[in-house]
Amino acid sequence: MGKMVRILLVCFLSVLLWACSDNTAGTENNDESMPVAVAAKGPGEAPEGMVWVEGGTFVQGSNSDDAYESEGPVHQVKVDGFWMDETEVTNKQFREFVEATGYVTVAERPVDWEELKKTVPPGTPKPADSLLRPASMVFTPPDRPVPLNNHYQWWNWVYGADWKHPYGPESNIDGKDNHPVVHVAFEDAQAYANWAGKRLPTEAEWEFAARGGKDGRAFAWGDELMPDGKYLANFFQGNFPHDRQDFDGFSSSAPVKSYPANGYGLYDMIGNVWEWTSDWYRPDAYEMYASITVCENPKGPESSLDPAEPYAPKRVIKGGSYLCSEQYCSNYRPSARMPSEIYTGQEHVGFRCIKPINQ
Ligand SMILES: [Ca+2]
Image (cartoon, rainbow, N blue to C red; front, top):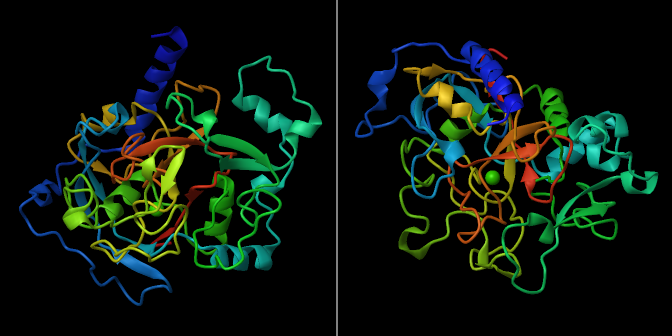
């Protein structure tokens, strides 16, 4: 372990303490055999398009063979109740925000070198202005099988790609009002949430909600990916990444509510598009939580660290997308967590918001 990493780890362990408290209250709810309250009626009238997620204690993370090391160790977390958007934020909803505010997303602006240079190793030379034009990440699969160790073989930085032009300047979102908005960077999602009087969920809130009351299960609906051969979420079928099939009905994003809701009445928490959470990403975030009896409303570490790209600030995205394949990542599980660089939009990353009662 490098000196820098060790220093960061010590800092991290100290800053995490504020996020959790050692509190044994609530452990009585953790017996998996006990019924879990689902689809509860919330306090007062539901805000439009939102459902109530009754708070509680759950087991966050996974130690299963499918899980990445960063999903463990599992640990108990208690979250307070909140209202949550029943679907991912759609193109139609995002357009209302843009029309009301004149907001311009990160992918529509030229890249700000002053910001970018903080996310790359010191001394990296400034790229030519032509390379700093507005752009976003688009899935551009090769036409043949490729080794799965380099995602740049199927992800391209496409100039002119943004939420209104998901595949580049010649593309559009005509007829896709009810699809999730994509190519939104973290600050775009936050700006929408502020405008709507809501906020982004923490990772713990998101995962608790995604489990739909089925604590400890591998998938949001139970222990099988496809019970009775049914597809219950929009993920990748075929041979990744070159051979994309649509056995689940869709080869890219699906209109929201194309698959059954979970126990809380939430749609597409798993699959369709990844969703931003407000937590900074660190692969070791759960190490500290695991020593605490019940972590209450954790908000994640104070800063991010992805050892693969230590200078890039990254937040946690959850839920997987229509590009998650059994062969490649199996990220269509509530515990799955990936880092996403906060300034970059992607074709398969969107978001939804929550509203705590006291907000
Ligand atoms: Ca989703």
